[in-house]
Length: 175
Image 1 (cartoon, rainbow, N blue to C red):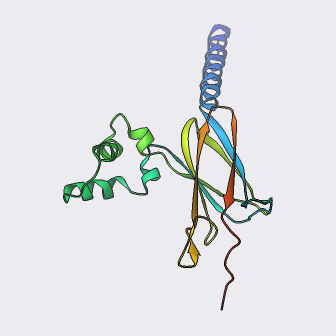
Image 2 (image 1 turned 60 degrees about the vertical axis):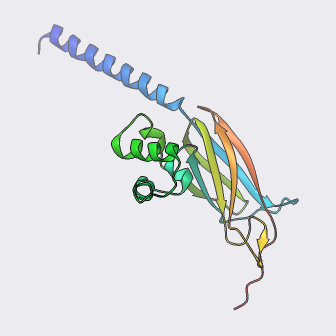
Image 3 (image 1 turned 90 degrees about the vertical axis):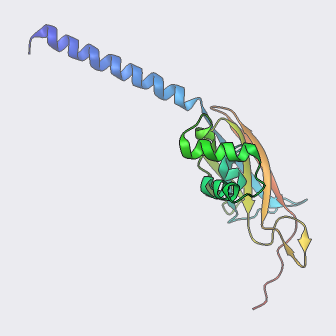
């Protein structure tokens, strides 16, 4: 291979590497981290094994419905908000809101110290759900709602710290 061709090849590889590095750096700024602690209300007692789910506000995951469920309900004549119908259409047809509408939930479980970390969370507003049977929400007929919800704003390359408190000590099990 002639020296000039070799030099051009090395230059092309260097430019491609620098371009790829810049695009990866740009991607890193668009994500952050949510970390937090799950404790008993009014105490510092940690709660382990709590399922943590992070969903983007404005996503179908935040509603608990799929795009197909929303569109089927709308087509059957159910009273569905126009915003939700548009979100479902965007999700299925690649409209302008498709990226947010199709945002995938991120999940983890709290450790023995009640701590959790969710990395690579897109910058923006999110809903953090903490779920463990009989720990969260007001007691109704002797049981508690298993989910607590906390809002979290995430900025790129930043860590958002949250705290979730359980409403009470779990009910005793009777076998």
